[in-house]
Length: 161
Image (cartoon, rainbow, N blue to C red):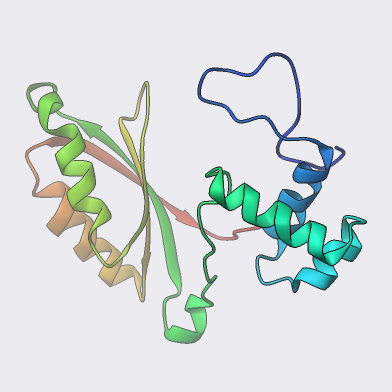
């Protein structure tokens, strides 16, 4: 499917679920706008509304659609500084990497925590109301944590998708 993030190809892996082109079309449309009314979705994927609703329910039942989320305009709430922080975990703290990552994920400024293979070990996306708050966050939660040997903070100027 042109422009799709997902594709049907080759034999399924043991943890994958088979979908057809119609399921993929539904997923693409819901990925663009999860609030689409069923009749609009059905029209876009060229199905009868009842058939489309059944397919969406089946995608949820099979675990392909895990949920829906709201996208918040944080700027309107005063959150104007976004950053990606690369974190290298100290060699002696490798056994504490996952608990440390989970603790970071629970902080209100943290939007995402990615545990990576390679260097860096973690990639943390944060959102704050100012550069000062970002600096305080890095010092308080990363710099003072002996599980982390180093960090690199990159300010996000634009987020396109």
